[in-house]
Amino acid sequence: MKTHCGRRQGGFSRLDLLGGLIVLLLWPALISSQRTGNTGSSYRMETHVMGINYGRIANDLPSPYEAVQKIKSMKIGRVKIFNSDAGVLSALANTGLEVVSALPNEDIPGVAQSMTASDQWVNKNVLAHYPATNIVSIIVGNELFSYESMKPTWAKLMPAINNLHSSLAKQNLTSHIKLSTAVALDVLSSSYPPTAGAFKEELVGQYLQPLLKFLYNSQSHFYVNVYPYFAWASDPEHIPLDYALFGASTPGVTDNGKSYYNLLDAQLDAVNAALEKVGYGQVRLAISETGWPTAGDAAQVGANVANAATYNRRLVRKMLSNSKVGTPMRPGVFIPTFIFALFNENQKTGQGTEKHWGVMFPNGTNVYSIDMTGTMSDGQYSPLADNPVFSNAPPPTPTQSPGQAPSTSGTWCVAKSGMGQPMVQSALDFACGAGGADCQPLQHGGSCFNPDTLHDHASYAFNSYYQKTKAAGGSCNFGGAATLVTTDPSKLAAAHTSHSVFTWPKVVVESRRGESDLAFSGSNQALALCILSILFIIRI
Image (cartoon, rainbow, N blue to C red):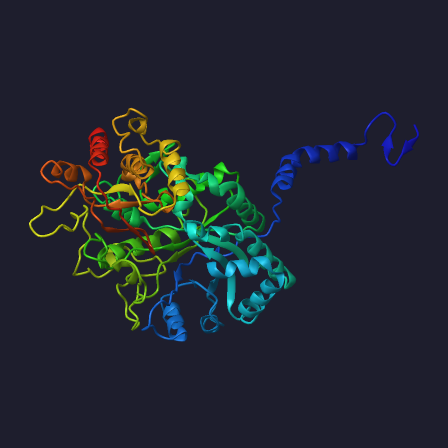
C-alpha cells in the first residue's frame, strides 16, 4: 500500500498513536500553561534563614556599616530596607546577605509614567550596587492599598512594576531580582474563619488580579505585613495571649478539618484562601513585617520585653523548622519572614509602641537575647527578670479620670468622624452584606433607625460585625472608616439618665503598626443603647 510522509492511507502509524498518547497525557498541563502563562522561573529566598527589617527613622543609630556587622553577627540571612539608600546598599556589599530593597510609595507615579525614569532608577539603585550587593527582590510600594489618600497611585502600581521589569529584562536580571509589593491585612474583607478569607471586592479586578497574574508568571512572592500583636491587643479578653505567642496547647480555631494553634497561621491562611478565590492559590507568601513591641503607652497592654522575646523567639523556630514548614492550608511551603525591626527608632510618630519594635538598642546592645538560627528552645534562654509572660491578658490600663471606675469590658468599633460619605457608605454596605452584621434594627421603623444618619448607622453596623468576629482576630478597620473605643457605650448610655449631656469618649487606638485612629465624639444616647443590645445578644 502506498504511503505518504510515513502515514498509511486509511490508518495511523505507531508514531502517530504514541504522539497522540503523549498529547493526551500532557493536555492538562498544556492547558494550564496556556491559562496562566507561567514562565517557569523559580522563586528566590528558598534558603531557610531569617530576615530583618532595617528601618532608620531615628537620630541615634549606628552607621550602616556598623548595623550590617550587627546583622551578620546575629546570623541573619536577609535584610529588608524601606528605600534604596546608596549608603546602606554599599554597606551590604560583599556580605552574602540577601537584600530586599524598595521603591517607596511616593516614587511610584514617576516610574509608572516613564520608561526612561524606570531605566534611570534601575541604573542608580540596582546596577550601581549589584551583584556585589545581592539584591534579590524589590518591593514596589508598602501598604499602598491601606491609604485612601493614595488611591490615585493604586492604578499606577502595575505600570511601575511592568516598567521596572522591562528595565531589569534589558540587563537579563529578571530571574535574579524579583518584583512585588507589600500589603497589610486590611486588603481582606473577611478573615475568619481562615477559609472565609477574601479580598475586598473593589481591589480585585482592577488592582489585585493584574498584580497576582504578574507574581504568578514571574514566581515572585506576595509580601504581607502580619501583626498578631494588634489583633490580640484590640481584644485581649477574648483572644488568648498564648494563641498569639505560639504557645497554645489546644486549637484556637478549627476550620474545614484544619487546626490552628497560633494566630499567625490563621491570618496567613486567610490570605491564602483569598488567593484561592481569585484563582491564584499557587502564589507564595512572604512575611514582609511581623513582630511584637517591647514598650508602649500606658494603655497599650502587652507591649513588653517578655512578650516580644517570646513571640520573636518562637517565630524564628517556627519559620526555620524542618518539620513545621508552612501553614495548615499550605504545609511544606517555606515562607520567607522579616522581623520588624532591627533597632528601636526614636523619631517614629504615633503611639508609644511605634518607637519600640527593635531587637536592638541603637547602641548595639540587645533589647533581649534571640537566636536567629532557631535552634534554642524557650528553656535555654536566661529568664527575663521583668515583665514575666502572663498566660492570661492583663486588665486594661485605666484611662478614666480619678474617681471613676475603670472599664473592663474590652473594645467597641465605631465610625470615624470626618470620613468621606462614599467611603463610609461602602463600608456600611459591606458590614450589612458580606460582613454579616445584624442590620435589621437599622431599617425604617427599626429600634435603631434613629438617629437616621450615615455615621450613626455605620457605627452600629461596624460594632455588630466587630463583636461577632473579634474573638477570632476580627478587625475594626473597614478600609480606614472605623476605629476602636475602649469605654463601654452602654455605661455611658446608663449615665445619661442622670446627666444632661451624653458624650462619646475621645481616645486614640492603634489599629495596626504605623496608623493611629481617632475615635469620634458626639451626643448619641440612642446609638449607645443599640450597641448595648448587640452586646446583650452576643453576651460579650
